Image (cartoon, one colour):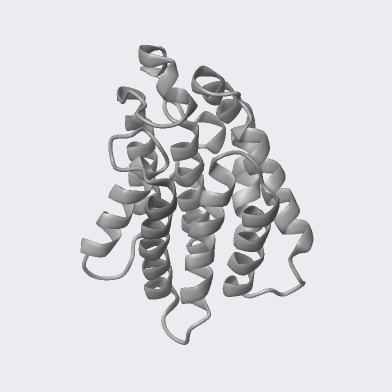
Length: 207
């Protein structure tokens, strides 16, 4: 299941996510993402389809996962779940859900590209999906998402707790952006298990 794969990535990246979040925040992002996904996987019914996986995950993150990022990830997952619940092509639904999820995250969180948040990974990655022609290349998309997430290391935070630490964050990427990159990693591996061999190991997100 995709959420098991996302959990695998969050488990592998936990130490790295904690380290980079400690630079700008209270260091709990790795715990929140990993423990949130553990809760999701525990509650997934046997044989759940992808729409159900995202629906269960959205409900859990919205209702139970703390921190600033938990509910925002829940909003993203809820939009994806809604699109997957409709008849049609799975890749088309995923792109539409990610697009709607980006809009929801920005509406509620009020972040823009350049603020050093998960939006700095999500927005350009979604833009790439929307403008691409032909079948979706999820492996290339996951690689691009990681590149966008790593690029937040060059940004000064303009929102949240990180905005108070000034230049101290420079050189270290945003943990929330890295968490979104892990979602794209999971999507790529879900669509093509062989992608594990060509994508960056989640335990070494920051190079």
